Amino acid sequence: MKRLKALLLTEGMHGMISQVEGMAKALNAEYDHKIVRLSFPWSLIPPKFSPISGIVLKDKNYITENEKFDLVISCGRKSVIPSIFLKKKNPKLFTIHIQNPKVNSKNFDKVISPMHDKYYGPNVIHSEGAIHYITYEEIQAAKNYLADKIKSKKIVSIILGGPNKYYSFNDNQLIEIFNSIKFNFIGKGYEAIIIPSFRTPKTIIQLAKKEMGKFGHVVDSVDKQAYLSAYALATYIVVTCDSISMISEAMASGKPIYVAHMKEKKNIYRFKRFFELFEHMGIIKNHISSLEKTWTYKKHNEAIKIANIIKSEIIN
Image 1 (cartoon, rainbow, N blue to C red):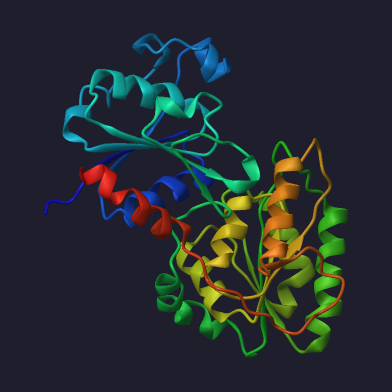
Image 2: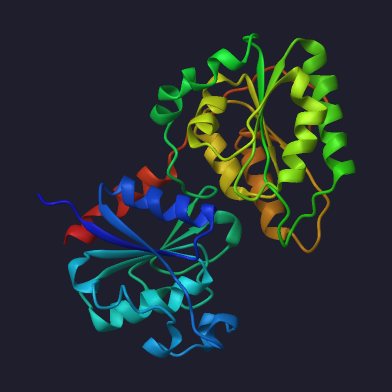
């Protein structure tokens, strides 16, 4: 049987790319990823108020190619109208939207929405956390990548995000988190691996080097192999609270995860529901106030679980 061909549509943010690529890989599909750009004023207008028309699209280069694809996997607000428009032009396309599209789910063949979004519909599949492209096998394969940077076998891996519309990052908050890690981990014989993300400002990386450099290894740029290796080597993982995707990716390791909380900038009810769910599932601890015995949980791969649900519908 020939492999499916998927068109991936996102706004280009790492968390979105991880989700659409994770879904495509789980479906064993070849894929082509396009960054969606909408024309003014449609780039500022919610999808439910936008016309299903090519006038919304600033870049139309992928529209003429849609016949070669079997499915479209989209993620993010700006990809909603392009996906619906492609389906309108070619009804044979199977469309999957990831996250809450803020329109009726019947505009797509399937919507994959995280449980914490509380989005419902007859064709909605709920995921526990965010789906992503990280697998346990990839994590284990990268284990030796950072092994020579650390002497101890007791390791805490710290995954840093960055400021966004929900959370602020400032030096005092980060120093408080680093001091808590020093007290609870470093003081008990652990070494640290610090990994930045695409959103981590250079100033935060420099602060991490200043505060934590002598207690382990600070990776000073985005490096996927280092990211995976940090998970494989870790005894414990600490992830900043600003990214549901990063916390969901950390879950692929099966390692105990602490969430380091930053100051809220706006209502974070979605994040709070996510934290409550993952704490109830025994995956995270919502604090770093004390070092607890390691805990275990069932490793989840939501992308594969959901792909198994919808494969038969795509093929048919």
